[in-house]
Image (cartoon, rainbow, N blue to C red; front, side, top):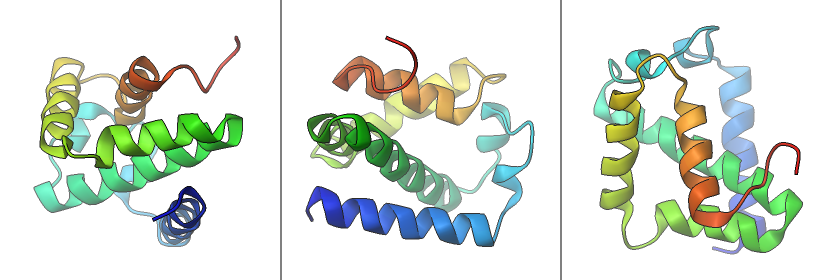
Length: 115
């Protein structure tokens, strides 16, 4: 799937989440809350979040978006999930998006914030 198609799919997923909000969008959603979700819900949430981060990174530079997407959805997805979950468990008072942003920027380079 090309980056453009992934961006469209991610945008549609984000639109669905915005139109049909769940408790994960509630103010104060922390890693400790993420860990109470069923594994299937965690997987869905992570896929949507990575798709969104990849889209945001691609807006800065297409190669960054591809790197973010490939980092998670590549051939080491089980290893990435283990790393993400270990990080989420280590920092229960942070947000899952903070963890994902830190891990993807470490792997691919900075794509948010002031340079």
